[in-house]
Length: 302
Image 1: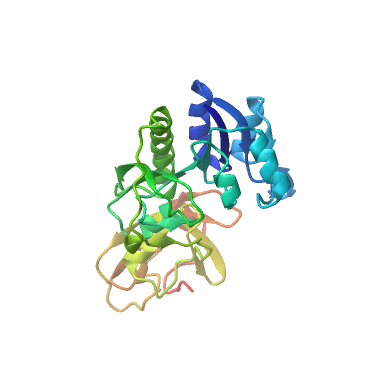
Image 2: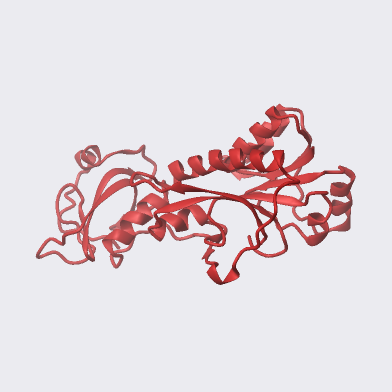
């Protein structure tokens, strides 16, 4: 088939690579426009943009698809289907209606659970035992279109955002190919809106003194590698941790209880294992404490 691929981040790369190896024809790639990155604020192309150019495929980076000019440009590609994976722009109805088989999306959750921008993080934060991938037909709603195919995936104890992201990217890529190979046989199944819940974009990655221990532990996993604590105005990322379900006596909530930086929280103790100070490399908690010039005892997270 003639396919337009629409995606930007690393999550979408696996699907694009599989399509490039298939007998389908990628006639165009749509990606978010390059944006300033790093200390020098150099314009950086998205992972999908880079892969497309390496394969000599034209890349379109519109800031919106609502204009008649962009819609006509899309139409002129004469796509039979558009594949969407973490693209980042809303597709208006006039775009959705152009391809013969519509626009199909790879979504990393078992819809209607966790519609929205951050389904992987929210599945970990909620303590879900399983997640999965949904291949869905896009409509004008937020991840509310009919399901073409789904596949479940167990969330393992050691999974964090990165490991789960990679597993779901691979699963979604394989599931996409199954759907495309049988595109005319699939009967879309409407979602039950009554069971919908939403994964809003996450902007606060801080672990607070008032957090319950289990909630803080899930933040470490869900926000990897961005979860952090603040101690005396110093920001320390926690990249890996354990959670112990007992509360030490004589310590207040949010207080650091020993030289290994164990943190007393509601209903338990958060035990950091791998940490990273701002501007430093990640290291074990033992190396981190050894490198400090002050004792952590009797200090509090903010």
